[in-house]
Structures are given as C-alpha cells and as structure tokens.
View 1 (cartoon, one colour):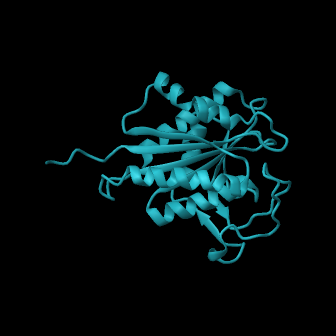
View 2 (cartoon, rainbow, N blue to C red):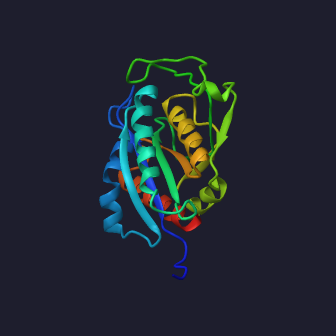
View 3 (cartoon, rainbow, N blue to C red):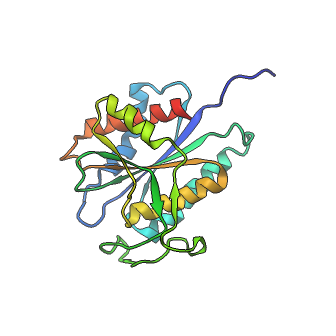
Length: 219
C-alpha cells in the first residue's frame, strides 16, 4: 500500500467549570459548544476534533478525569503505529483580569493556590509531582508558541505569549498534561482566555476555532 500522506491531527480539548469569583466560566461554554461550532464552520482537512471535556476547578479533583481522558486518547491510537499517532491536547482556562488571549509556553512544578480550589484545597509551595524534584522545575510545550501567537495576531486577535501560567489550578493541570505528553510523544498546550465581558463569546469561539485550524496546519 502506498503512502497516503500524513495522518490527521486529533485535538482533544478541556475547559473548567465554575470556581472562586467566576460563577460562569467562559471555557465551559467554549468547550461545550466547540463541536457544533466547528461542524457549522467546516472542519478543516487534516483535523479531527476528539473529546471535549469539562474539568473541576480543583487541583486534585481535576487530575483523575484528566488522566482518564489522556489515557483514553492514548488507547484510541493503539491501532495505529506510533509514527502516525498525532495527538494534541488543548486546555482552556479563564484568567478573570486578562484583556487578551494568552498562549502558555510552560508550567512549573509548584502548587501555591491564592485561594482554596473548589474542593477546599489550598496548597502552598508544594511540588505538583514530587518525583520531579524541586518546585522550580519547569516543563515547556513542544509546540511553536511564538510562531502561533504571531499568526493569530495577524488574523486580528488580541493574543500574547505567556511564560507564567500562575501557580493555581491551570498551572497544576498543565504541568501534569505536559509531563504526560512528553512521556507519550504527544503535544500539549494551555490557553488562558478573558471573561466574556472583556472579549465577547463569538470572538472567543472564533479564536478557539482558528487555534485548532492553526494546530492542524503546523503539526
């Protein structure tokens, strides 16, 4: 059988539910509506939209479902060779004081929650993965964040590259995801979005769709 070109990119997406100070989390809306939105927009060639999951806004509470979905995606590629499995995880989180989108380049092995999460947990200077050593340990995404930011900005979006995902639940989830991705030859990305009061829902849906289309073209 001859070569049929590169296999499609499968993108799995997560968002978060409500948390302290944000009763209506925009990422829950974005992720919940993304499948229908992409169908109406037209799924680009080379992109498969996989699972769209909502995680609890709690460090330890989010990890079990996170790993369940990460492992499910991995099992879904078992029938394919490792060379043809092209999987990206995209995690959306809200930053209530943000004025633009932020594509996060890295996560840090430190949990220092500024307030209790939705399960009442408020760690201070704890390593997210003790086996990884010091809380200063960083993991970076293997995706070309600077290039992606430039392309999205040229499309007209207010977007920046960030090197600090904070030390709250978003960073906690991203660190675990980056670690899993590195161990399994996958890709992971975290994107912070503003509230809908700052950037309206339709624009944020368009941004999410443009991001997925860009990922399919890059990877």
